[in-house]
Amino acid sequence: MTGTGSFGPFVFDSATGTLSRSGRPISIGGRGAALLSALVDADGGAVGKDALIEAAWPGTIVEEGNLSVQIATLRKALGRRPDGQEWIATVPRVGYRLLKASLPSPDLAASVLPSLAVLPFGNLSGDAEQEYFADGVVEDIITALSRFRSFAVIARNSSFVYKGRAVDVRQVSKELGVRYVLEGSVRRGGERLRITAQLVDGQTGAHLWAEHFDGAVGEVFEFQDRIAERVVGVVEPQILWAEVSRSRRERPDSIEAYDLYLRALARHYRLTAEDNAAAQVLAEQAINLDPSNAVYLALMANLMEFRSAMGLPPLRPDDKERCRDFVERALATAGDDATALGLCGIALLQYLKEYDRGMTIIDRAIRLNPNNFVVLLCASIGKLHCGDLVESIAHSEHAIRLSPGDAGAHWALTAIAHAHMVFGDYETALSWAERSLGMNANFAATYWMLIAANAHLGRIDTALRYLAELDRVSPGATLSSIKAGQPQKDPARTQAILEGLRLAGLPET
Image 1 (cartoon, one colour):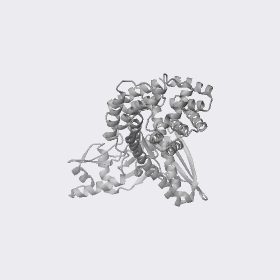
Image 2 (cartoon, helix red, strand yellow; image 1 turned 60 degrees about the vertical axis):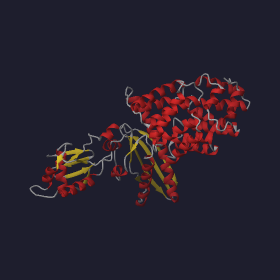
Image 3 (cartoon, one colour; image 1 turned 180 degrees about the vertical axis):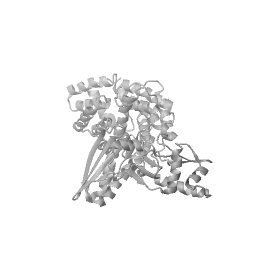
Image 4 (cartoon, helix red, strand yellow; image 1 turned 135 degrees about the vertical axis):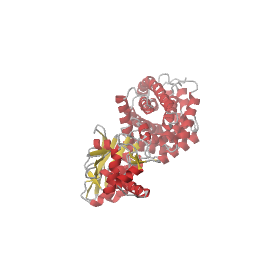
């Protein structure tokens, strides 16, 4: 090879034997340069050990172990690829080859999950001692984000090569092979700290979300925990809904399981009977393509549970048996996937009426990922029916605090309204239900609260107005269908709602 060649973020000049990564020189030594020249020249093909020894030790007889040592040194200089593999791969019984960025590993090529890189946060304080804090925040964020299974997070050693450099996130996205980039900065002023974070679409450079966090220097570790918690709580749903939008916009005809899952999720969040039926079709298609995917299986169970909980008729007479099958299949493969566990727990508790088992699974999901929005919603609803109402409210408030604009926040808002209905505090219940209505006007349970609370307060005209809206989003709903869809471990948890609906004139059957 003569001249200059490139692979991934690297540029190699064979004439001078120099290697650089994103413009920064990397020392590899004379023999390392000779080996790399031979590997680059093979353009991704395998190079035999004899050929590599001749390239690095021309005309000299050396032990094969010397080659192994030089390859190990070269690998260390290069670091790992974004998919975790070495840039120089071993070809058994042959030699070595250089993995090109355009030739991703089979595992990476098969994955359609979005990926994220968290860049080192810039230190704007002018105080070098604040570097440890900025790096600690980023490491905590990477660790916390790694708990989520809906996207992949690039390891710290890959993203930290950009430390101290001004970079274009689109270039970072290309070099690391990621779709999203989280970047930020740290600034200290006296005894106060400000952290700024922003999520960027790495392909377009568009900003998806940005926020700043303020705290006292003396509360540095608590502050660090709060930042990590807040960022992960926001980033996960932001990525999810960016992916939903991207799927609608870019791949409307794709039959990939992940795209089908995203479309099912989008229909689910519309909350109408028709959208629920359409979502079930999409989710089942995704399962047919990927039958062991715990999240797809759990979503299908959740869609069937939701239909029952809202008092809607089943799509098939064997829906309950099918839901149980989806739950058991999901649990068999879920492992420590908190989202799948949470959704399975709710299906068991709400639809299949296995209260203790459902709560055990939900509690495990919370332990695995206490900042997962979906898991918090599941915990809130689980505690609402089968646990401590104060804990239910706390889980809902945590979900709202993490993602106040999330498309699913209405569930948390209505759960709080429901808890206050149980307490007999109808005015407070109304205030939360009205907030939920502002988030989503198609959630039947929100109307239950609005109808029942107004009826208990003697505002029958207002209750009747909301009753007409309930018929729009949940046609044919009756007291018996609503009661049948709700857990009955403690009938007092739904008593005030059912009595209020009865006062407003909702038919029994």
